[in-house]
Length: 113
Image (cartoon, rainbow, N blue to C red; front, top):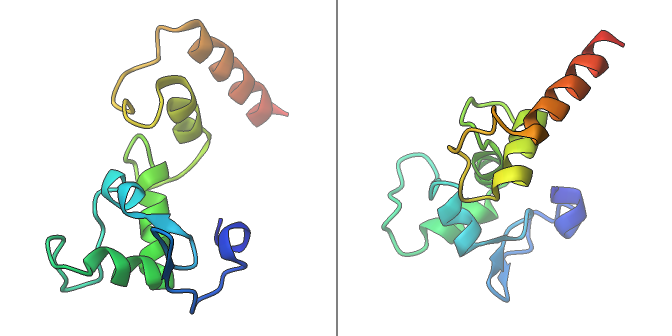
């Protein structure tokens, strides 16, 4: 993600509403849980920019956004939830959907291959 966004440019700063090597917007940061640097506060002016401009904190933002089921692992299950429910409804179960049945069969086949 970093490489695709900015070539992993660690000195890119903020431009046009996007900050850091992952090119993160404030909205993305908020959706990810407003992650901040250690000993910082979410409400501090500049907390978003400082975190997004730091590679490790920026990585935590991206992981926080993509870890849809909040199990601290970004995997196919997260992508399936985001794809089916959209980014704002990760808590909604998909276990009774036709999509989930097909997805589960596919994952199981992949693991047994």
